[in-house]
Amino acid sequence: MSDVQASRSRRLRLGGASLHKLSAVATLVLLIVAFSFTSPAFFSVNNGLTVLLQTAVIGLLAIGMTMVIITGGIDLSVGSVLALSGVVTGLAIKAGMPVIPGMGLGIVTGAACGAINGLIITKMRITPFVATLGMMMIARGLALQLTGAAPISRLGDSFGQLGNGSFFRVVEMQANGFPKVIFPGIPYPAVLLLVVALLGAYILSRRQIGRHILSVGSHEEAARLSGVNVTRTKVWAYTASGALAGLAGMVLMSRLVTVQPNEGVMYELDAIAAAVIGGASLMGGVGSISGSMIGAFIIGVLRNGLNMAGTSAFIQQIIIGIVVIGAVYIDQIRNRN
Amino acid sequence: MFDTPAPPTPLVEMSRISKRFGGLHAVTDVSLDLYPGEVVGVLGHNGAGKSCLMRILSGAMTASDGQITVGGKPVTLNSPQDARNCGIETIYQTLALANHLDAAANLFLGRELKTRFGNLDDARMFAHAQEALRQLNPHFTNLKDPVSRLSGGQRQVIAIARAIYFQAKVLIMDEPTAALGPSETAMVADLTLRLKAEGIGIFLISHDMHDVFDLCDRVMVMNKGRNVGSFRIEDVNKDDILSLIIKGTLPDDWTPRGGK
Image 1 (tube, rainbow over the protein chains, first blue to last red):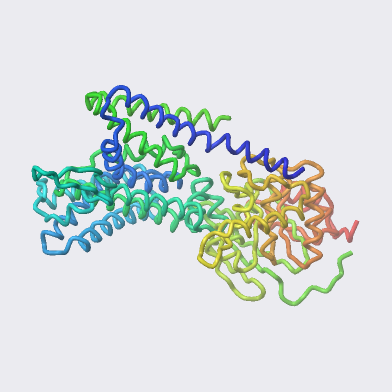
Image 2 (spheres, rainbow over the protein chains, first blue to last red; image 1 turned 180 degrees about the horizontal axis):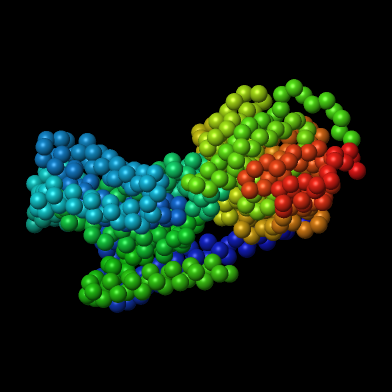
């Protein structure tokens, strides 16, 4: 009898979070089918890899954002932190630091910004919205001040490796002396996104800190009374978000082979949208990395498909805005049941 | 009659505890002790300071003044974790459950079992939770649902299981039956007596006079943050206690009732 009950409850559970994820996947497939009709070039290996590349940055931000949103917070600073991390790396490389330690320094910068966010929120008891809004302006201001608002270029070929390199690239020399790309290869950023997403999902579901993140978002006072160190958990989540913003900054700047202090404006909103479309609740306690990745790809495909179809950037904003409101509305209906 | 000789050291001794919030005196100069195998009722109006006093003992709040000793040793309880490390477990009136997590995750929240590699050992936590919950309620089957889907009684069972699973020496029960039906209330009463027989000391906060007279060995009544009377239960009757709760004093003609 208990088996019957157990299987019934398992089926019931499928009705909640899994249904949302399923509908998100369905949306993604629907978008891909629709864009394949509107633009013949959309459904091709090349364009698929382009989408992967374009989504990598938003995807990395969305992983950190998901953790923060699950704690019941929000991180508005990731776009600016991304730029500041890039600037620090650019300046370090210009000062003679090799590329890899330079990029490490950039990621550490991002993590430091995130840790400061977490400390402001927990120690000064300032709401996440205000604290990270402040950090958004501070980091952007620092990035612009440090560079005089000018891009840093000529950082060397190796700086561009992370963003432009790929695995399994097959190039054939033609008789006329021009190379012909047979398979463009799987871009490094896409592989990096996959690795980080798997790591994030593992931490969230299999590690103590992940369980604590969920519990803090679910009921903060209950978590505290149960002996969860709420301060440490929140600082951890914001630090992770900051570090991933730094990593996303490395990918983006490397792809451009130039550090742009005004890159990444409004990226936080794409990351939040990805998490929310993927089923994360802004009330906290609910969310998953896999869902957020689906959300990131919905936004990536939407942007790419609309571009290919020649839709203006302004119309794109309108459409993505509607999609976000729609996703939150569906989430609310789901929670009401 | 309870004439068992009291052991020399109490499990817990709270002496001259005060708690102030700015100008508000929530608890003023309250002393209270608890011996093994004893149930002490902490009574009073809403806002009389009893919950505040218990929150100080459970580490959820720190006292402004006073000292707490556990097993004869002075301790500082700055967090719920500190109190748990001293063997003090609490069943909160709000239950303090994380609604999105399942029963096992809640039972082990803050004290998760881990595998050799530091991963969460969900299988082992589930098995232990199943056993602990079945002991309290044989009909508990839907362990894998988030606790927000469970009934009030089931949620209460999880909160109780969490407190007793980790071998508490001192148990604080804050209105443990307020949200329960009659059969579940009887279950909690049975459990209280069983734990008492095992030598656990229990502080019981309750508004239910039946519970108090059925379960408690001693009572302490608070009024406006002060201890207005500590008695063995057989020395007082319901009217005396109500008078203490409401007026803060005993009836004028009061003498120890001597187990009426």
